[in-house]
Image (tube, rainbow, N blue to C red; front, side):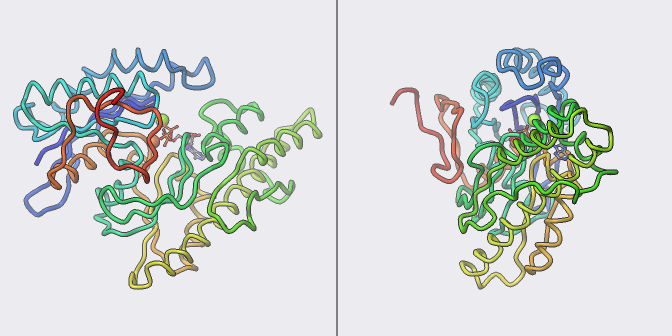
Amino acid sequence: PVILGIETSCDETAAAVVARDEAGAPTILSNVVYSQIDDHAAFGGVVPEISARAHAEALDGIVTAALDEAGVTLSEVSAVAATAGPGLIGGLIVGSVMAKAIAHARGIPFLAVNHLEGHALTPRLTDGLAYPYLMLLVSGGHTQILLVRGLGDYERWGTTIDDALGEAFDKTAKLLGLGHPGGPMVERAAEDGDPKRFSFPRPMLREARLDFSFSGLKTSVRQAAEKNAPVSRQDVSDLAASFQAACADTIADRMDRAFARFRDMLPEIAAPTIAVAGGVAANQTIRHALETAARDAGFTLVAPPFRLCTDNGAMIAYAGLERFEAKMSDPLDTPVRSRWPLDRRAQPVIGYGR
Ligand code: ATP
Ligand code: MG
Ligand code: FE
């Protein structure tokens, strides 16, 4: 099968074509991503109304580019998948209406994909990972530990009770005057910083549940910056490095507990794996902490290429491919959902107001 996937849940307008080749391996035929980051830069964050309009303007061209690059015509497409949530409602509507229109016109199935499922299944697309495996999703909007048991079968073991990790990086960058998007800026500033100069809190470290909290950490960075005002370049580097070290320690601690829980629950899995997704997975300090924790626990770390860790259409097309092969499809009156927890319902609610 050949699947067209559309992703418009946040600030990337993306479309991709993914197919299963004769040998049974999934192949990315095209993966076109238009980032709206410049459209929002002046506002220091994503503006929903601007985002929805930008998706509406760009999507037609992005879908055409994805088909052209893949060298397929719409008549060769087996099904169309679109992100139906969670995310910003305007963009979700633009993407799913486009997918439904194509599906209706061609008489092929429409698939409503949960954005988080797209991230969760990416290591199967890139590395052919077998179920079950652990997933750490660290992006601008999410910080979750998931047990991926099978298609549509996910357990959320941990989530953030306040800021997402990427959000914490972005806010820290802003208060240190480092600009947007903050993650890469903080990482660069931290390169010649002393990670031990400030001892920031490692939130929730002694708690048995696997949740995260990053807003207290961000406040501590602000207080330390205020105490040392006016901050020098070296101060900023030391603050960034100390912040990053606290984040890495927190991730390592939570994952230690997740590894132990996985071993308890699934002792029959001899060679367990942990996969990462989300933009923060690009951070070398966090990556290193994760690698060490995984190695110590006997887990193999799978890290897809950065382009497939951040929001993209290929992950939605691939989730659509697995759903199509499992003979699933969604009715054309399937609504989009701004909130859609992955573990509670694998399918969206059918119909409006019913
Ligand atoms: P979501 O996917 O949850 O809807 P999103 O689109 O903001 O949200 P991604 O595109 O996966 O998420 O990742 C963007 C986030 O990753 C931003 O918060 C950014 O600061 C962060 N990030 C990117 N590179 C790095 C880095 N090198 N270090 C730390 N954080 C980073
Ligand atoms: Mg994004
Ligand atoms: Fe995402």
